[in-house]
Image (tube, rainbow, N blue to C red):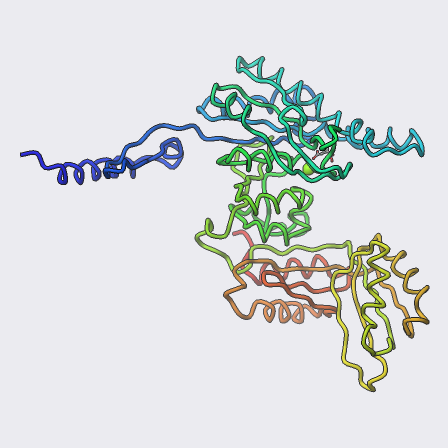
Length: 451
Ligand code: ASP
Ligand code: MG
C-alpha cells in the first residue's frame, strides 16, 4: 500500500545518506531545497568566485597569462568568475610620480584619471589572455559596471554597485574582468579608492554578487602566526577572523588593505589570501563562527613604526589632556597608546604616549609650541621602541593571557614601558633591541611554534 509519509521518510533518508558521502567540494555545487509539501529536492548550482590579482601577480604579460590560467581553472569547474586586477607592480607609483612632475597645478580629478590607468590597461590585457584560452571574457571599467563612489578623489568610498548586467553575463559563462581601484563619482568623473584599493574593489564586488569566495592572489602564501623573517617557527594559519586580521597590523596590513577587511567583515565576504605562484590553499579570513577550534592567541605581531613621547611635570587640571591631544589631532598626528599617572602632589603628573615614527618631529614641534600655555615641564622623545602585540579572539573567554605575556617578557629581562589592551589584543611597548627576543619568546609561550 502506498503511504506518502513512509516514502517521504525513506526518500529523505536515502537522499541524506547519498549527500553525506559527497566531498565538500562536490556539495558546494548542490543546493538542497524543500517543497512546501516537505519533499526535499536538489539542483546543481555554480559557485561565484571573485579572484583578485595584485601587482606582482600581473607584473608582465607572462604573469597575466599565468593568472588567466587560474581564472580558467575556476571557470572549468562550472563556477561564475569575476577577475579583479591591480596595475602592474610599480606602475601606480610611476603614475603618481608623473603627476608630481607636472607641478603645482593639482586637480585631484585629473590625478585619478592618470593613476587609475594602470588598472585599465591590465583589465584589457587580462580579458585578452582569458579569451586566448577559449573562454568568453570582457573588461568592465569602474564606470561601466558601474562602481559608484562619493566625490572624495584620491580616496573615494564606494556608495553602490549595480551588478545586474554582470550577473547576466556570469550566468552565460562569460568571465568579467574588472580593474581594481576605480569608480565613478556622482559628477560622472573617474575616482580612485586610495592606495591598495584594488582589494576594496574585489571585496565590494564579491559582496554585491553574494560570492561564495573572494580569493586575493598575492606574493605571500597566507597569513602567518608571526613574521617568518623573525620567527622561523611561525606557521601559516588555516583561518583567521576578520577582527584578528584587523588587529594584526604588522602581519596583515601589507597583505590586505585595512578598509577591505572592514568591508569584508560587514558583508561577511569570505576572503582567502593565497599565492599566485604556489598551489597550496592560503589563509581564509572569515567570521568567528566558522572557526571550530579557536586558539586563545592566534598570532604575535610587532610594529617598529612607533615612537614614544613622555611629558614630565604636566599640570594636573581638568582639560589638560584635551589641550595636549587637540593640537596633535589638528596636525593629523595619530596617537596610539596613552598612559597617565595620578599625581603625587596634586599639582603635576607625567604622561606618556606613542605616535607613528614619521609623526614624531611634527608632534614634538606642536608640543613645544604649546608647552608653556599647557604647562608641560619637559618633553622627551624616544624613537627606539617597538610595539609587540598578542592577538586572539579566544582571549575574550580566557583569563591570564596578559599575565603570561608579562611573565614571559620578565623571564627574558625585558622591561615593559607602556601597556594597552583591547578585547582581543594585549600590546606592550619595549626597547627596539628586544624585538626578536620578545616576539620569539612569546610565540613559544603561547604554543604557536610549528613542530
Ligand atoms: N594600483 C593601486 C596601488 O598601487 C591599487 C592596488 O594595487 O591595490 O595602490
Ligand atoms: Mg595590495
